[in-house]
Length: 253
Ligand SMILES: [Zn+2]
Image (cartoon, rainbow, N blue to C red):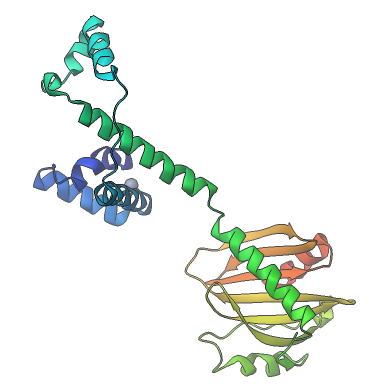
């Protein structure tokens, strides 16, 4: 079953209107397809909120009449064919339900559009953490330029072992490490220097696929974000963007 077929049948599937074979086909597809799974969940939320809140809108006066006369005047044979046999039983309530569904669907759709993406929310958190570490004069819990001191320091404090690289030879000396809290979890913060500038490198495990470095600028800070080998990384500093990208290149090697 293709995604398009699955989407077309989702409504009927959720309403229990499909026969067993069709229903199983949709179920099997949705289980194996993230996008259709998401669509199913959205339909589900929509159905629940309609049931829960009993959303009801009165159709505008004369709408039914207008639709009826419009359909009657349409002599196109194809359209005739499409008019369901139950047409004479149409009631304002079914029109109203369609309008209600449309309004709720639009609200969900635009709500999704307007909601800040999780990456943006996270980027703001990274900026706050960076600023806090500079202001509170709490850059490091373990101050050392030795990766063999910094890495073991994290064991027992985190549920993962961060990769700690010293890039002194490449112009970015390691100065220490710190525990931090981002994305609702404990993360490792590694501290590097570039001349007089501080670079915070935050990292923690992720189930997301590898992604190429992406550069952002927020409140005068440059950020580079990427995912590599099951770890998500955020580098932030007030060094210029090209130097920070250089730092990231060396981290990734
Ligand atoms: Zn699909």
